[in-house]
Amino acid sequence: MNFREVSMFKPYPNEFPEDLLWQAGADEACITRWLEASMLRIAKINEVIVACYAMDRGTELTFCLHGVVVDPAHRRQGLGGWVVGHAIGVAESKGARHLLLPGAGGSRLFDRMGFVPDKSALRFDLIPE
Image 1 (cartoon, helix red, strand yellow):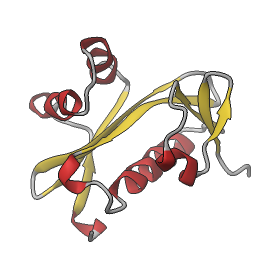
Image 2 (image 1 turned 45 degrees about the vertical axis):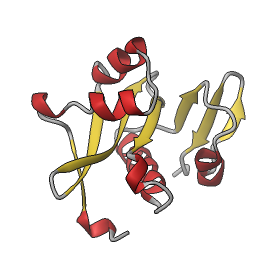
Image 3 (image 1 turned 60 degrees about the vertical axis):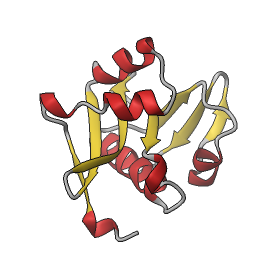
Image 4 (image 1 turned 60 degrees about the horizontal axis):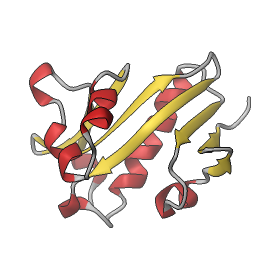
């Protein structure tokens, strides 16, 4: 995949990725949480939404990543890792030192990205200054 073709945006009101979330098996409560997140971002290729993530500030130094969803046709091409990297960069640029992913044990993507188990979540520690 050529990541130069991928654009990451804050969605316009008519671009909420509800279809992508339903396709991933999210329930109504999960979709509501994602759509109400303070940082919802969508990845687009040729104006088609192919991935998304949602994140909120937990504390001054911690952000909560609700998850990452990639369209099935674009999986196993590195896009999920690229999207997680974007979320990490946004959190770091806003002063975060930790990124938590609640209830996401056993995900190979997050394991490969360096997330580690921490109580009932996965934690990614950003590089200290």
